Image (cartoon, rainbow, N blue to C red; front, side, top):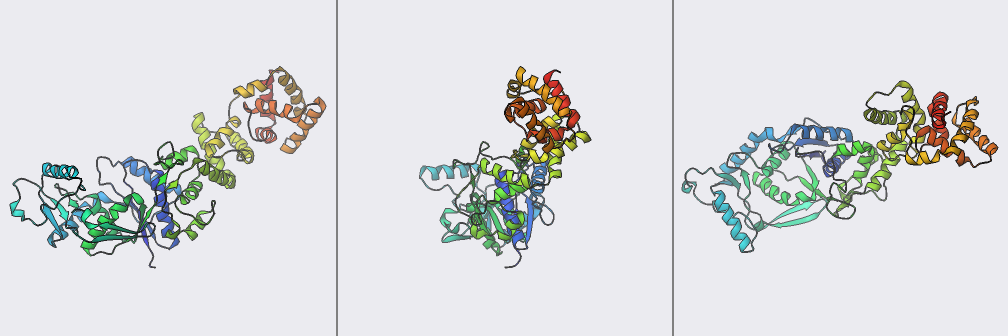
Length: 468
């Protein structure tokens, strides 16, 4: 097979939503697997709804996901003259015609069809009429002369053979009465001019494929390979909504998911490689093919995404995680972290990643490292610090003050010996200690916390908590 050319063609009317990101990923994987090209086209012909911030969000989302495109970004609106040129060429070849129906006539046509239980479609009034009969002052649209009988067959790589009765497909508009091209025409011309060989998109575009094929055949152009991938539904099987996860890619970044984790998870929505759930991007490129795309709707599941992200967090470079968590902490605190605070964060990172499923959770669990004294205790921590516990912590502070080695293993031994002397369980010493040092009842391993905070800060926080 010659090197394929795929494309992702979003409309910039909002963010890069999760379904669009999955479509972009599949196109990117297919192109990279076969050594082909992945092109990006911004379908910005809807001038009222298309915005520059939305375009910027799409580009930013793709870059964050690591989906690099080949060549320059194509902006559909800028190619309107080329689209109109093709329509006029069809008109000159007798494969399209001018339609002078007024809006009132078209509405009457629709109403009649509905009343009679027929499909709502244009009835071809001007298909064979002489333009000389046109009413004065009416600006016509240009329509394609679609086949009136027979079938249009889409040999889809995912959905299989899909047959459309041509009698159900009317003569679609190519140019509006103001001379602007419609979406269907623009897509076909752009795909041809960009040499797109494979159109991989959501199954909600399947009906468009039949209409686009008729136009492509009228132009005598090669029909691309179509692959209409299943939609993404919520875990309950209903259409994906915001409560399910129908959010922009930037929302997943803000929630603390890593791009490699989101790539991995999205690849498994509608495609599979055996029972593999966790795989690298390199493996996904090596394995991806259209034959293993399913026809049934995929189900988005936040719990599974969190599990995948947890895996990648534990595999991520500690310095990178410090940067990611540090940026979130700085945003929350409204200030830059000092060098000693970044050092604390780095020292605590191994323990922090044991519990966190997202970067957001990672930053939240690291907040105690950079909070200013005296700490604010949450309700559970406050309950742990009763008078008995504070008295015990005063005695433990003295034992810690005498420690010569401030490493986690050495400090663990100090606290264990203290518990033995006090004739208490280790937890009766460790839990109040955790509350005093972090302000919470849950934290990374307490001896790692002591080591990360350092001798001076740890003892100062114990002094605050005990009132000594």
